[in-house]
Length: 119
Image 1: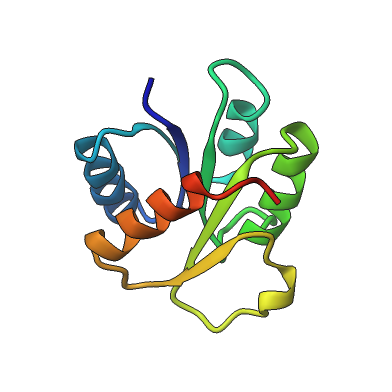
Image 2: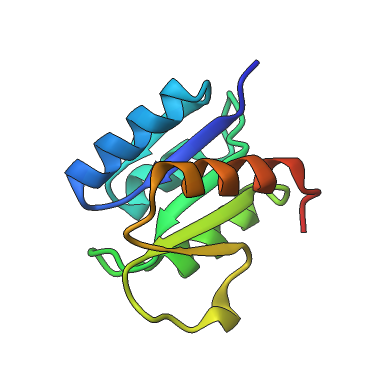
């Protein structure tokens, strides 16, 4: 069974192209445009293996807060943050990748994060 990835980003074109790349690489992808949609997916079945989330999002919750909330629901959840901004790394409980990110770099980060043991 392929790893299930929850991809959260408010930018539709980036979310679509990234989801497409992940699906083509063999992953099961669920996409969400904000934290509310994302949290509805976490803790249910099938289980989410990896959260890939934008850091800066609308509607009051950033990717760091989303990751903390998600970890309350699923302690072993692995996390990758993507951002185009300089953000404080001390809030991160996963890997931070800078946008624009090429597909090969993203896929390598996904592969290595999934292979690592949970924090």
